[in-house]
Length: 423
Image (cartoon, rainbow, N blue to C red; front, side, top):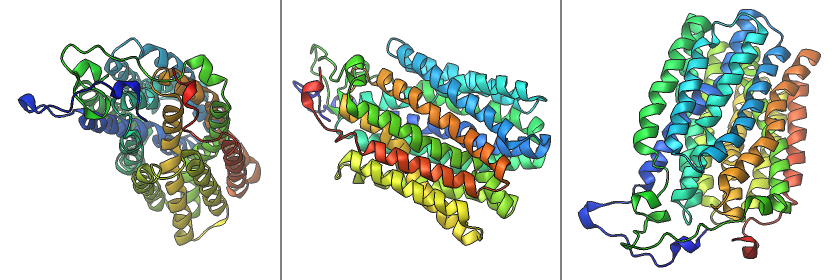
């Protein structure tokens, strides 16, 4: 999406061997999301299963903790969106990592459910401050024309975290128990994020003498006005409402399915297979997201998103019924393909339609509303499991929610119009 920032810019200059640091920034964003997702987003499924096994608590009560986690993280995202508009985003990410690491370190020591809810609330604040709102904001500042590719690469960290770190967390917890494992996991959260965020995640290309996408600023050139739609104007559009409400249903189904997946596979197979299920899900997501980041440049973005949500519904129906290992993993692969692209498309749709001007606030508000589904999904599936005694009804309910989300997204119209909305 070209902006007014692309005018009156000199070509890249090789003076002093200067090279565009944007892709190093993307690499830093990728690494931050590896840790954030691996030990928090995907890790919650591992912690849910461990609390169920070690404490014997009802799945619905543990799932309530996951619901609280996502509600608090969404509310925090609104505050983070305002904070990073005027503060160095690296400080926010590092502070979030420290808070998340400290809460994760004490997670294994909780003895009552109210303690679990308190720790998850603090964990959620740190998760939000070191997660998608600040990271996608940085990427949208550095890239306009190649935003889809840059976001696909950075957000692939979400899936790589599930491949690399979540199985390590599960094995450590299986071998040592929650109380012994979580202090090490909390330490890893801090140590792996802080140096990467400080040295690689540069907040703004303009501060480094660059324009988005890699052109050099002319010496003495005034910074052009930031392109985009104002926050209050964006909220009035049909497109914003369709994306926000559609994602409420689609992400609710997705997160509910992810959080219950480890237990579903373990119930139907064994713990070792359950560990590999997370790896398969995240691995498929990596490949699908990288492919999708290129395919979406050739297709209408909203139609692509609607199709991905429909594929996710099919995968959830499969997980509701299958019992053989081969069919379970076939459904997981299909689910991973949808996850890889659906998560990427929400920030990309908002950035494409509304630009950079108020992106953090628009995306943060969209996430806040959609979190009703994200928080409610695990709770709904956990409650339905307690009621029915199996995962058939929960995953069918998730599939139905996803179909509703797909239908709502289809009403939003294209992501590239109209130009007159922009300031």
